Image 1 (cartoon, rainbow, N blue to C red):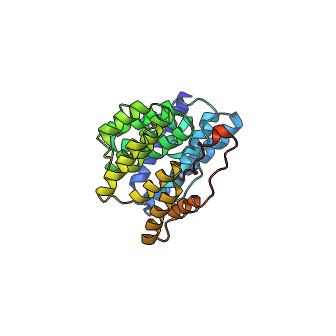
Image 2: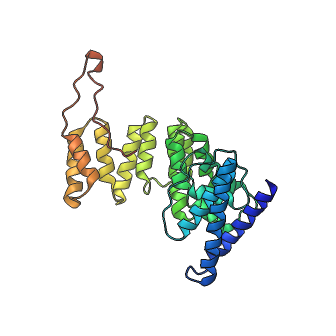
Image 3: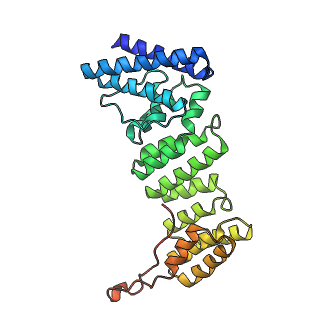
Length: 292
């Protein structure tokens, strides 16, 4: 096994060398052929020996080559054997695995490894918003929050990625019923005018509709785009479809192709839900059109 690990470490080094070469150069074509042959031979032998880790590494190497060549390999299933990642291997796994606990573990391995270089860190950081979202939707909140903490690292985190990570982190906190922490972090990192939609969601989750409306009023006064649509969603959620309809008509007058506005407008035309008993008389509300 030690010999195999040494072989794979060398192949990952050769992979980096290949990626640095011009794609149409003779050296790149020759090295590409050698790497693919190595992966093919190792995968065949691994299947005979039922070596799941070796088989996975062969698939990982091939998928990375396909990705660099501009193809779109299907996301890989994780190894059926527990894998101790070799240098450079966790990054490939984070890029190529299907969403799930093992992909999150691979990304976390890259982030905490002191040997991770700046370019390697940048590659994995760019994956984090989608990865955190997948962990959040799978209810793996601790994993999502751990990965989202990378937004606090100024090196290798672009402003766009940082913003997306903050948004996903706050949604995770709210979904995990940690609303006090979500509001505290939002105040420290989000502008109500720039991120009014997320602020509204947080206030509504905390049972503060008046605060949500105040945020929208401030955003509307500042000229922020999209406020009317968000306000219409709030009116629908609060059971005032006639007000939502007026707002959505205004949105559609300016943007006739706005799909979300048409969805909200259609919802506003639905009859109110019929209460099933006296206790339900005041509990009907229009369906929410807030995207998940």
